[in-house]
Image (cartoon, rainbow, N blue to C red; front, side, top):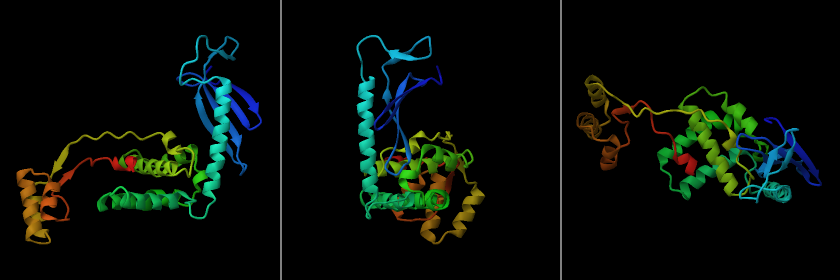
Length: 264
């Protein structure tokens, strides 16, 4: 039954029953006003397979969040209407039309509304410019699909960069979803490159610390380097107290994941 499906054609599209790992579910498929084929998962189906490879109603009283065919059909029509509303909003001149335009608006939103730190915004900007916008910047918002994003993300080697860029893409699309510029987030369907962080610290040797002290921009930075290295105090605490912006004398082998992106 892994590949079993059942189609019900209706005036606004096709309602399909598919077999999934968690049980059968309804999927809606239709062509929008731009003649682009759209697929959306509707919800779990209150069905069970038969010995003949077909579907029949599941015994007992319907339970949430399962759907019967009439409910799934009604939800399909709602999805069609929502999608067309999204298309209409996307055609307005003041709305972002491409992923790149949406990403720029997301950064401004992070700065003005969320109060993200300059260093965080700079980190996002660097990742967007170096890894994301060259490939996705000119892609229309409504043209992005999970398959296209998966192929793009598969070009990255396993590691922190792959994890980071996917997190940012998901966050940008989540922002567009909240603004009702798109009606789903295809980034959520892209398989992650799981990265495990050891939490280990790689400390500079005394010779390396001395070299940093000699190369410091001033006496204050030199004192910060030495104090952080010899006392074990967290470098960020030194920077906050002194207002310095120099690099840290302690290098962490696995830096923290940019979790703020997912909340942006």
